[in-house]
Length: 215
Image 1 (cartoon, one colour):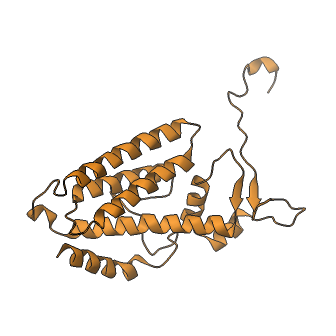
Image 2 (image 1 turned 135 degrees about the vertical axis):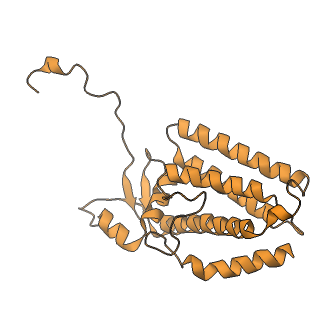
Image 3 (image 1 turned 45 degrees about the horizontal axis):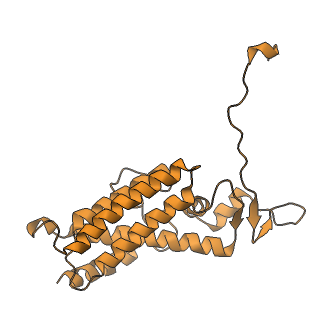
């Protein structure tokens, strides 16, 4: 600038992110444990890395290791399996049957679980953008939905399950994990950025399982 009086204020906030650790040790060229983003993407999908980052505090030391990668991949599988099962249930002509709560208190508990997840995600993001707790809330409501769907002789409230899938997808879109305009689910299963096996391989088995359980 030409003079100091042209800029009266330089910054509003100063943030300090946590150091990146590789297998528990601070990343450093001197320790020869340096890894570039390009190298990390050569081993993992962009989605997997985003999940890895979201599940760790941005202002805390972040660990890139086989364990944290495995954990992120496990969580990715949880999301994918839930989306696919809800999608398979949605393909059934459920509107031809009685619509609504058919499992009594279990239906109300599931509905409350979604409300609690929304509140927890909201509070977490207000608390220093705590994506770690927000992700935990999303995974918790999915686990509760999975237990609900596995109730013996289940007659699931499909609209409630879809509401959970849509909300989880909306938050993951905000986080940059999901792209596209689908109501719920990961965009482009089996394409680049989607680690794991292609959706077409698993889909027939899920549909068969859902159909068998409904009958």
